Image (cartoon, rainbow, N blue to C red; front, side, top):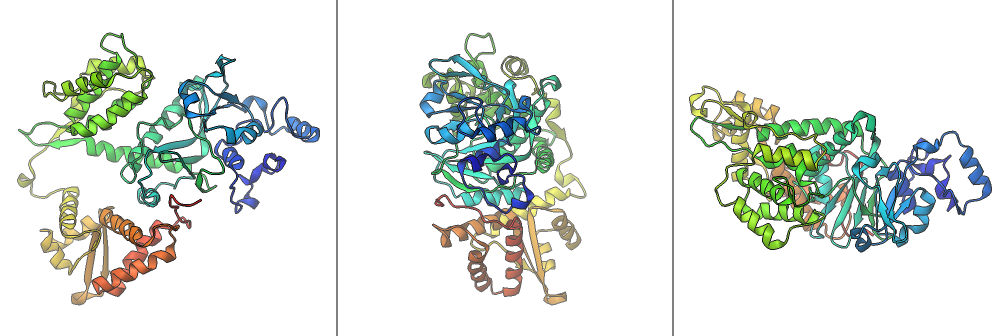
Length: 526
């Protein structure tokens, strides 16, 4: 066991000479996830030798005031009742891990107990966080292809998860940050707010590919790594700067998507469910009853109205808000919940009321999220037919609509000469070239020159579905590798009868998907 805790060698986590060594023991994984932010040995009752303990205490690289604690719990039932333990050392984690079910991979400044005899823990609150080490997420179903998660990360341009755990109902994943977010009270928890925004954006983006629970607290309790539940691990942490840059770009795209362009005479519609205030309020779990205009009933009604005003189907709103209600410390009864939802969808109300939203945010959140008025949601412009030239993004939508109509995952490519394609898409050849050049959602490959040239275009999303579909046909119980995808390329070659072009396109896409040099897992890896 002492080999696991050799601080000088740092267990292979940051030692460049040992970077090729893949860590597989749960103790090493937990130390990697928490960035050595706990003590190495117990303060009392350690089983390490006196020599090691003395050397550790004298090590100047380990300032004791910078270590923190994590919270653990023996079972989900105990956790539901607030019962657990405060752990300060990796030695304790290593000894107790097989008798534990949950822990907090993000480190807290300290912890204690409301009731020491019954082990009711105290201190696992967001304002007591010392540092954000990981961004976690839940997938509450086994009916999911984890390969889609990894393809989705590649498609989004973000790192792949470092750890996947199997849970009784699904899976949990973790992005281990290369540089943690260190939380400082004197800086008004700015780093915490930034980390929450990055996590929120990350989960919203991933939900497009796998059923990630976006209401799950990204910095709360998660399953603890054990010998039997680790199905994937990679010790190359996610670059924090890259995630920050990606998050800013993602928010910009979301902002543009929510910035609904309308024409004179049209009804104004905006998706309030992607707004910052909505996502912040729906994550609040301690909303109580008995507060005038800011109780849990008002919170649920306000969130439901936002769903209705955004045009979301009742079924989708029901699923999301039912999860919100379940997460409350004191949830509403089912009959009351359904009554409020029915009232919100009665058609009597146009949208969430500013005063209600601001009151709820002030009382139940940290106040960082703000309600943005309708003047920030809408913009008028001339109808398209009245403008001489359409915007490039509108042209891109025209092409994608045509591609989705005439292609499929079985045959994802639309082919022809450039002139013929331009005629099909009802635009000039020069415009078509420029739109495809600017687009990140359209793939184009050309083979040959002059009159004999053949151009093939595909929607990136359709091609993505094609690769997933092909994998499901060919790979059921084995880890996907680059070599195993080559037969799929050969099948496309024979179907389309343009061998050189299709081989070039597929290999190009596969090279993008596998640029990290590692293969994603399946849920059957032991």
